[in-house]
Amino acid sequence: MIDTIGGVVIMVSDQAQALKFYTEKIGLDIRLNVPFYGGKWIEVAPKDSESTLSIMEPNSQMMSQDELEIARKNIGRNTGVWFFTSDIQSTYEELKSKGIDITKPEKQEWGGIMSTIKDLDGNIFTLLSSPKD
Figure (tube, rainbow, N blue to C red):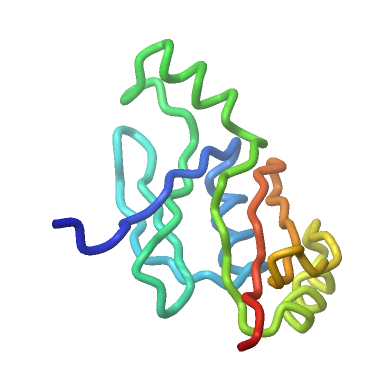
């Protein structure tokens, strides 16, 4: 049986700038940074997370022309990735103070509180705080 989810690939236009953004602005840790098909395979994650984000530029050495075109189109899209926080208001304020494009937290119909975050390429992430019991 499946034990855990490993990670999600996020396509970016500049891997070095994205790495700075995710580590210095968002506060994620580097889990892996190794050579890969003429570039690098880089994974970042929150300190205690099992799942990672792999930040990757479209790469003609490992992708077919069709895959390369799809990868380029996936830059600046909604990633479908959720970041969880126990204190969304302070997380919002901290990220906003770092110049991150983040929406004001809003209570959702189901009780949680949500914001959206955009990275340097416009990739969209959801910041989520679950309802209190």
